[in-house]
Length: 457
Image 1 (tube, rainbow, N blue to C red):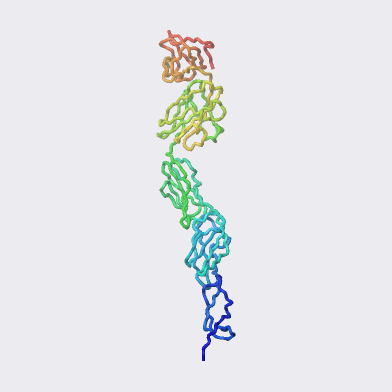
Image 2 (image 1 turned 90 degrees about the vertical axis):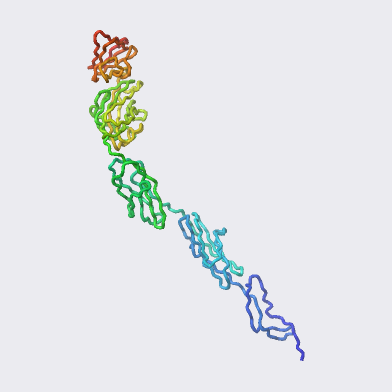
C-alpha cells in the first residue's frame, strides 16, 4: 500500500506574534491538526509565544510629603520586583532630571547635600524583556536648618577689671542641631573650664593681670562643634590713683565727686572750696597731688569755657601721664571767651584717658569737679612762682618781664609778693586785687602809662 503525504494546516495559526509578547514560548502536546482534505492527524509538539509581565517598583525612602531640614544627605531606596524575568537597572529621577542609575539589587542611593526646596522623586525600573515601570511620585520638602549658635553673655566685650579679679563667664547655646554634650571655655587657645550642665556658667577666679580673649565651644552629640565670637577683657593692677589735693594758681581746692552719667554733664558735683579765679587770655597752673601707689597714672582735665553744661572734646585742656605723686600742668584760657564762670573736671585713673572720656564711667581712679571764675584779660599776671623778684620772667604768667606795652595783674595770696628792685619798670596799666602787695624799693620807680591805670577787682 502506498503512503500519501498530506499538507497540514495548524488551526492555531490565528496567533500572531507582536513585540508586546515575550520572547519565551510554551510547548503544547498532542495538538489537533487537520489536513487540506479534512483529514485529522496528530502533531507531537508546537511552540507558541506568551505575554510578558512588567516589573513592579515603589519608593520606600523617603516617604511621600516628608519634610527634612537641610542641606542634607538624602537616602533614596526603592522596592523592585519582576514576576517573570530579571531587573536590569533602576533609575532615580527628580522631576524629569535623572539623578542616578542603579544596576545592583540593593536599589538605593544617597543624594548628597540636597539644598532647601521642594522635590518630586520617582523611580524607573527596566526588566530583561524591555518592559519599563515608573513608580508613584514621592513629594519631599527640604527646609533651611535652624542655625545653632553659641555666644558669651558675660563678661561683655572690652570689659576692664582690677586685680584681684574674679570673673563670671556665662554662655548660651541653642539646640537646633541636637543635644549639647558639653561647653568648653578658652582663654586664647588654653582650655580653662568645661561645663556639661545648664547653665553654662563658670567662676573664673584670680584672673591674671593682662589682656584675655575668651571663647566658648559647644559640642553636639553626633560630632558637630560651634565656637562663639571672642570676648576681650583686660585685668589691671590694683591702683588707688585718688586725688589728695588740688590747687589752681596757688588757690587750694577740695572736692570728691562720683562718676557721672554719660554723655552730658548732668552729675556735676561741686562742694565747698571748689572755686578758683583765672583770667581770659592767661595761663593757669593746675597742681595735683595723687595717691598713685608708686605707679604711673593718667590725668585728664576739661574746662566748660562756654558754660553750656557739656564737656566737649575740644575743651580738654590737659591730657598727660605721670608717675610722680605731685606735679603741675598749665592750661590757657581763651582770650575771646565771654562767660564769667565755667566748670572744671579733673579725672585721674590708672586706665588710659582720651579727650572723649570726660563723662564715661570710671572704674579705677577718681573724678573731682570745680568751678572757675573768669576775670578780665591781662597781658601778664604776677604768679610769684620762684621768688619776689619783679625782673624774673618765671614769676610772670606771660613768661617775660612786662614792659610798656603790657597790662599787669597783681592778685592777692601769691607765694611771694612782687618786689621791684634794681631797675625802673614801665607798664601800660595795672590791675590789682584788694589785699595784694607791690613793693617798689628806693630809688626805683614803677611807671604806668595807660589810661585807667590802676584797676581793682
